[in-house]
Image 1 (cartoon, one colour):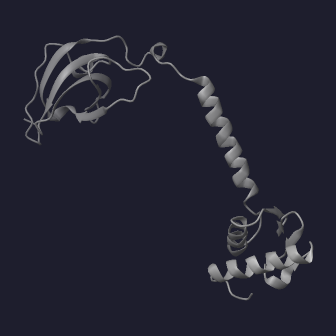
Image 2: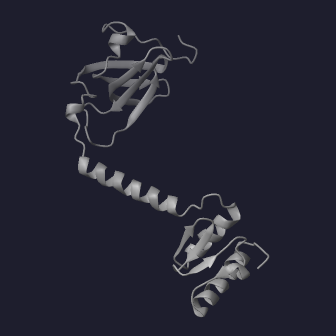
Image 3: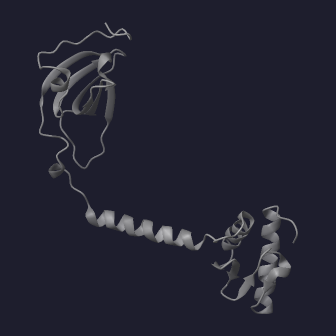
Length: 189
């Protein structure tokens, strides 16, 4: 009897390593009363854990339910057979075009995120940039925020630090900047 009260399970298949060889299929009952059928995907003898894929047939390319079971807590184990190596990569299909598209999207997103991060600017400056970007097209130009490609907001990013552009664009940027500073509770506008 193990410390948790589970009964030791006898098997005529061999030692634990052979019994829990990858690909063996079992009907398993554990001390909690749960029962399932599963394919051994891995066995780690040190903590004595068995990793099962639920079911009796491998499902390459499909989502799987997996169980990690402490072998000491198995109260019933019935050998149902053996499947081909469920980890054999020849049985798996991978959509390389889909993976390449995801990679390209992640790279574009990372590049876009990098463009939105100011280098050597304060957290306050980044907050102002992020807030302005919600209503106006902005980009960093060194530590200045360039708005609508014509109006420049310089540190310390107050209304009187807005330069360039037409009067209408300049006034619009000042107004949005004041509103965003209030919303962010950054005073000194």
